[in-house]
Image (cartoon, rainbow, N blue to C red; front, top):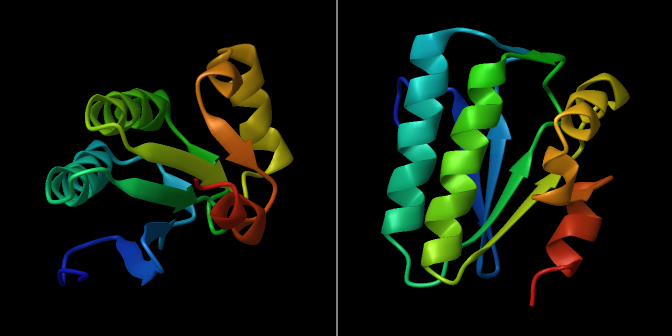
Length: 119
């Protein structure tokens, strides 16, 4: 499921697509555009997508990542799907709080909790 140039690790857990970033720093615009496109393709390929995005490896991210997440969230929502985020460091979580995006996204401490939250 991973393309050679993909900076994501993608796997299925039952009916949930789990996406993990391979990069510690999500700052490069080209990589952000690529991950957005990769996840968008996953969303488009499913009727009612269930997607978990894990930030376990991520130490830093740019505001472009937040914008991409909003776009992904909206795509999933229009398909009556579900999106969960997990394993976000305290430093990055603070950005979600400041921008009030923690109100938009379902954020879980760990991937296991997030997986259990899907209906």
